[in-house]
Length: 344
Image (cartoon, rainbow, N blue to C red):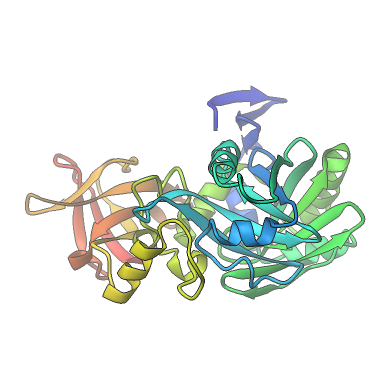
């Protein structure tokens, strides 16, 4: 994201609308009905060429070769120490792979991949100028898509998805908030029309348009980590709890594999990302340290005041204290106490 600005009467973060006037109401739409989000600020890359599947399979932590056409998975890029450089979803389409990255990470992922394309018949192309992304999230998401005549591809398992194509649209089963959801990749020429149609159907189902702020509330409540907030270049995938979704321990070589396999065989890491309930004092902010009896035991990565549920946060906690109910102080002078709810 590149700062905050006002666009068409809405508070926007780069190209992402932060809210449509009432983030709490939009959060309720995501939890109780369906919210429609324009996520076109996210990165979109296509990997093409005769070697595109084998090439990407050898670069990422998850099993790309095992995907059938129409399926996708969540994966990561790691360095030779097993630490994350990016995460993204990859979808196997006809003759190409589509990558969906965090905002601003498309160029980072493309640069990393292009370092290794020298001996392979592979091209990495930026799809963002050609396709936008509209996401429908919430328990009524399938109802919204059906009302618009769109297919509702199922989530196949926790780490794999399927997609369906209708005309120029690609519809992916992708729950971004822990309930139900779909991503619709739309040619930019029809993006506004498709977004408005989906928004109208969502409003009829008791939901409506949602911005980034509501999505963050739902994400934090669900304990879903986000690269750039809860994960960065110092994070090992098992520390963030994403190894069951993003890492295959049965596949062949990729950068960082030896380290991650060694952690898997050892059985633990020294810290884990946890869901936290915070009470007392001022709401925490990312970077606030967690401590107990003078010992530094971790830090807050994301925090939000959730309507009706108080202050919830995500943060890293030392392994010995990753126990539901464990209480940690937030900051040296704060009265806030963070209780561990469980791992993310």
